[in-house]
Length: 157
Image (cartoon, rainbow, N blue to C red; front, side, top):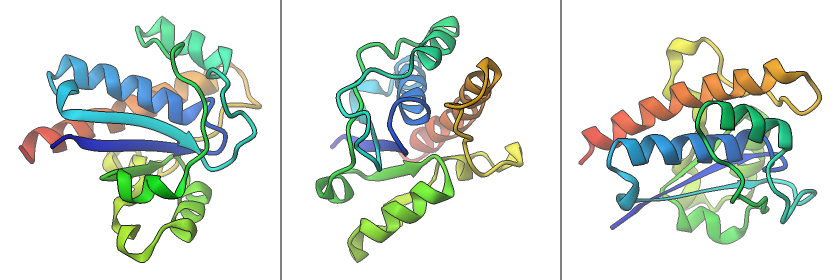
């Protein structure tokens, strides 16, 4: 049975599609992609149907990640029972998800960067209103957490 993984931020155009794209590529390289279903969503619906932010796509493309096929969507009630792991990019989205989730799904939801405590940062900052360096920082952070998630999945086989 496939493990289902969901990455969540606010609008699903910067952080969570970056996490989805980075993790998908790292899973492919690790030979795990056929055992996983990977998706991303936002707690808000402002950008539903839109491609990831062009600045995030550019930064990701420079590192070999293609985010162009992804489209923003809002989280749904079905996501809580449908995904094994739901990773929030920051505490605000974590709180929103926990508030919406049924009691029996609470343990599926966590901060993505909790997987990489060595980073000394617990939230993926929103790069939307900043400069190019913010998009690179997001990629640095999600690459580190993705590496740890790959290791966890390999160990739990």
